[in-house]
Length: 123
Image (tube, rainbow, N blue to C red; front, top):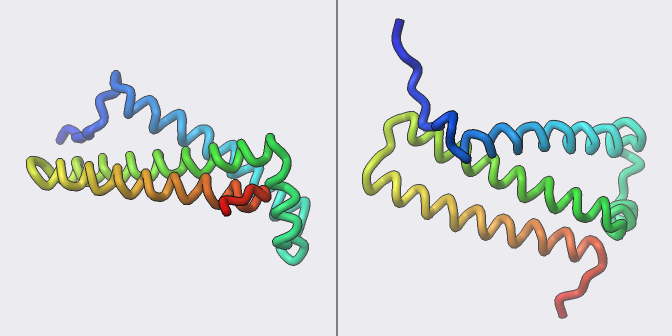
C-alpha cells in the first residue's frame, strides 16, 4: 500500500495550529449560523443591526478573531496543499511570500472593516 505524503509534520506547530484553528472556526461558525440564520432570519439582518452587534466588545473581538483565524487557516491550508502537490525550490519560496503578503493585506482589511463597523473613524 502506498504511503500518504503530507507536508505537515505531526509534531510541528503548523499541524497543531491547523487543527486548533479548525476547531475554533467550527465553534464560531456555529455561533454565527445560530445568531444570524436561526435566531434572526436573513430578512431581519440589517446594516444597522450589524453595527449594533459590532459595538459590543465581545462580539467585535470574536468577529476579528474569526476573520484572522480563517485567514491563517486558509493560507496555511493552501500553502500545504501546494507543497503536497510537489511545489518546491524557488516556486515554494515565492508562493510562501505571496501568501504571507496576501494574508497580511487581508488581515489589515478584516480589522479595519470590523472597527469601521463598530463606529471607529479613521479620518
